[in-house]
Length: 162
Length: 269
View (cartoon, each protein chain N blue to C red):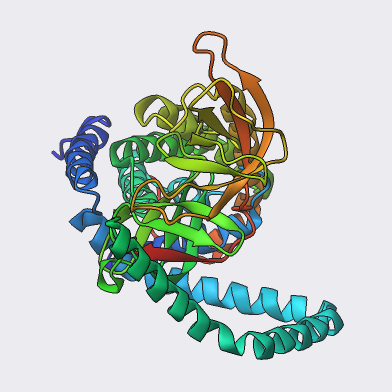
């Protein structure tokens, strides 16, 4: 159990640091990959609903600390996205790189919708910019999920679903 | 027999904790500071992020150096020549500043606030929040409200400060505004430039007869102590007359390409 927590914490710290330092270098316009959200959804694919909620909570906490804003919105979005990830992966879905990308993409869209309504963006009128940005980020996160899926297979997490 | 909890209990409890932590963050934000939870959470993350940033900068510089070695060498020679030519400038500037201070004193005008600057690396960029994170904070003398500039122009303004990092909103953030002056030989019009939450700023001139044209440069007007005069904000791209007020307005393209910059200066008072 302690080993699992330590590995998950290390995984989160590296993903959050990559989110802060590397994501801005990989941007296309305003489309910026979220390594932290992708990592959290990949992690919760193997987890129970309760574990997924905890993973989503810490994802939101780290994300809001990185942005310096919107803590409740980020936590709510993280919990919902990770629980949806668990739900999608629990329906006899064989986890392959392609399905992992799809699950991450769908969960990213849900997280973005919750962020939009709970933590208003600086310019809420710019919905025409938000929609393409959300689609772009979902695709980008999905692509990032493919290599992360292979990493996850090597990570010896024991939070197997009951 | 072991009782199982309903699935919703854990997320509901976490949401309540998240809401309470959110209130804590909002209270700290109202004081223009980061909260203690963010500080604690960032402790293990920031050293890793800084190391990643440093590594990425090194790799990027190395690759750029290999492919542009010749032009870089020419640039270095040119800069060395200019440095030699400008050796005398600091003394001259100091003399002129003393002269200005003396003359303002004789005329009974308020003395200009002098700004020192702190160099900072841009640790992260959040385009949808119109925000950047810098690796300098209160221990370097940075305070909320301090202007952030780059060699190409005005970047934004510090909005949140912790001991060793700070967040700055960009000039395109809807909460940002600054007094500007059109910089042209035949025009010195003054207006207020505001962010609008997209790639452009909007300028409101103070009169309907404002002499402003597309492609005019806009610099900070220095109307307050906050921003020194003469920092390039951007260029006007479209000028119109607001028929409801009769005043002129314009769109302004920021001078700084926020995607490209890696370092900035914070002007501390």
